[in-house]
Length: 230
Image 1 (cartoon, rainbow, N blue to C red):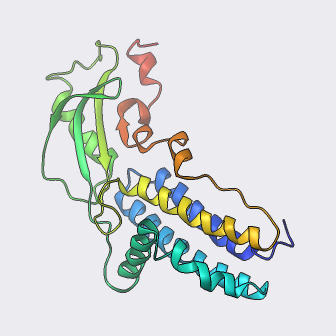
Image 2: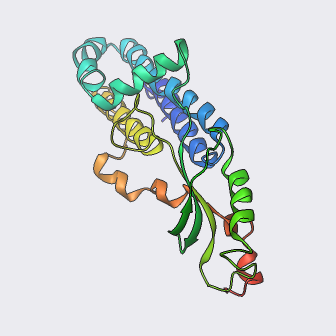
C-alpha cells in the first residue's frame, strides 16, 4: 500500500529478493553468482536499518529498540549473514569456489562421475563441454541410445561463513524469510499487514536440486527429439 509507513523497508526487502532470484538465474556462472550473493548480503542487512528508520518516523522506535536483538542478533541465521556482509564489504569475498560433480546422469541421477582440478570460477557450461569430450564416443554413444542418459554437471556452493549445514542458496533463502519476520511484525505495530512465508513453507519453494544440475538437454532442449527420446 502506497501510504504504508514501512514502504521503504518493503522496497529494500524486495531488492534482497531480486538478488536472490538472480542467484538462481546465474547459478552455473560462479563469478556472476558471487556478485549476486554479495549484493544480496548488502541488501538484506540494509533491511533492518530501513525498518529502524521507518519505525522511528512512525513513532514506534521503542518497539524497534526492544525487539531488534531478538530478530537480528538473537537469530543465528541472520547474525551469520550480517557478519558475512561485513566480511564481503571490508575484507574479502566469501564465495570461493564450489563442489562440482560431472559425469553421466540418467534422469538426473548420477551414474558415473569423474574428478579433476577445476578453476573455481569456471562456468558449468564450459565444464560440461569438457566432460562431453571425455564421455561421448567412449562410454556413451553419440546417439544417446539409452534414454535418459546424458552428460551433466552438478554444482553446490557451501560457505562456512554463512552456514554449517545448508548450501549457500538455500541458506540465503532462509535468511530472507527470517528477515521477513521482522518486517511482518513491524507492520503489525503500525496497523497494516505484510505476509511472508515461514520456515515451514520453505519446502514448498523450488529446491536447489531443481536447478543445480546442468545437462546437455538444458542447453539444447531439441536434443530429446534428435536422440529419439520423445
